Length: 131
Image 1 (tube, rainbow, N blue to C red):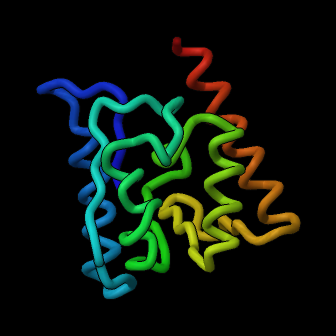
Image 2 (image 1 turned 45 degrees about the horizontal axis):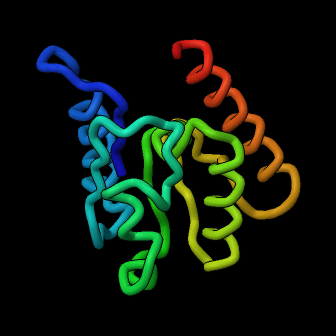
C-alpha cells in the first residue's frame, strides 16, 4: 500500500515506496493479493474513505487479505484517531499491519499497541506542523 498527499513530476516518493514494497515481495516475504495506491490523498483522510485502501476495508475485498504492508505507519494515516480505529479493526479481523521501517510494530493489545499509537500521534503532529 502506497500513499502520498502531494506528488509532482520531480517527486519520487511513490516510486520509492513501490521499490521498497517490491523488494520485500521479491525476498519472498509476502504473497500479493492486491496493490493499493492513494495518490494526492492527505494523511488526514480516514483509511475507510480513501479510494484505494477504502475498497479493501469493505466486503468483499476485506476477506481477501491477511496483512497490509506499508513502508511506514504514516502511509496508512497521519491521524491518531483514524489509526486507532484502523488498528483495532485489523486486530479484531485477524489482520496484521507490517511496516517495513518498523518490523517490530505490533497492533495487538499491550505495549506494542501503545507504541504504535505514539507513532501515529507523532505522524499527526508532523502533518499539523506542515499544514
